[in-house]
Length: 311
Image (tube, rainbow, N blue to C red):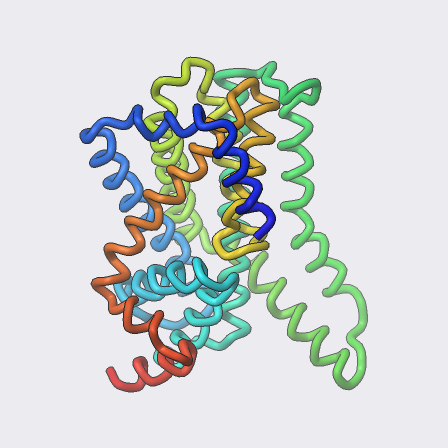
């Protein structure tokens, strides 16, 4: 709540950043809605491929797309509610175990993070090899992210070599070890990995195009700068603090914008634009999938359980 109030207070005293909304023509708005719809499908497609591989279960893409859309609607109200809804729905309708769902979700985020790091390295290396955020070389930031990405592999090696515990700790140890092995094991499936890498690369380019259109009248918003904004967008989607990280991401964008010599208000407006167009895309599909009835249900999880049995 504090973050949201701070954003409101900032724009009340610094309204020039909101001028970014007025720069969008009707044609640009239509193109942005199309690009956000493409983003939603590409995101779902990647998650779908990884989860099917991890769970060894077959379920239709369109059904999974529905759980992504409805889950996003729920997460806009309560953090992690969308993931819980999706896990219960897939468990009830397609017998996807919670362990396999969590492993698949983590594997997807892990591969997604790896691709975004690699693509950002490629963008910075090609367009702006001397790129700095204040006095810090962006290469150090990307290197630190790469080290964090390697942690699951290191943890898997540790769990494989250490002896298991007894009782509750043994069960917990085996469950974590199973999930880590499953996550790291996704890298061995070349066909799936190739398709995910291709979709992720296309989605990266798609999102850079979205940010470029939103900042079309900002001359110093280079490709490298846009890549940094996208990386921050992904980080704030992995670590959820408030519903949709509303306010949190805007403040993070303001800070990054100030470090990149952009107006902080314009950077926050960029985050708001991305949020608004994303919600419009989600809402259109959400209404089609019965999201309004789901949101009005007093027990969302029970509703997902009943719905899956009724079909």
